[in-house]
Amino acid sequence: MCPSDARGGRDDRAAVIHRLGLTYAALVAVLIDPPAWPAHGRLWSHLVSDVSYEELHAFAAAAGVPRRAFEGDHYDVPQERYHALVAAGARAVAGRDLLLGLQRSGLRVPKRKGERVLRTWPDGHLLPDVGPHRVDVIASRLGPPADTTVGVALLARAGGRFALADDALPALPDPQRGQPLGHLRARFGPEPASRKLHVALRGVSPAELIAALAEQQPLRWAAAEELADLPALTYWLPLLDRLRGPR
Image (cartoon, rainbow, N blue to C red; front, side, top):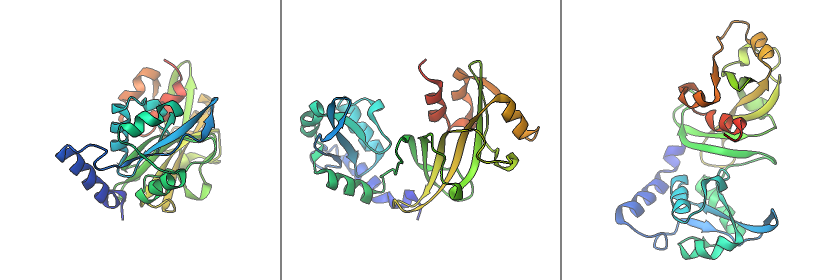
């Protein structure tokens, strides 16, 4: 069953909320746990939805929670915002209940230490000929599992310009060449243990990229501001934007 099928009930519920103009307090789908997670000298809560990311983003925006606080499947919110978010309609639950609700919804994004999910497409098409599937773009200095890696993209940077070969695996004598920068994850099914496949992004020097491809794929160099105009980079763009740094 593809994610779009599994999410049908949640999509229907979100549509009812929108169509009837119901408040979040009337049909609560946004959950918040107590501020109990220490970081940066303060305590933090997690804000999640058991319906959809779209609903979570809408609630957060209406409540003034910045998008930069989104961590792939939840928002991190400081303790001083807790009571205001509950008053706005988020349902206060224990941390274990929040995690359980997130897992049951199929919206939980598994992460390893040091990884950050930058964006998720619930009905993506990273892999052709398999129907819609969830796609996560992940910033990580850890490479994805070798046994589920079905592609490798190589990225070279020089003088503020980028070159990316997004189908370099067949040309690589060593798939572990270069430095891990992140990866794309295609996930089939809503459960945390569902099947996953990965495409890795690894950083190399311009010379290494040219040598690896050996004329099998033409390189196109693009300035940082041109990246958003390249359709082939749709899934990679959040990661490339992160690698660009402050603008």
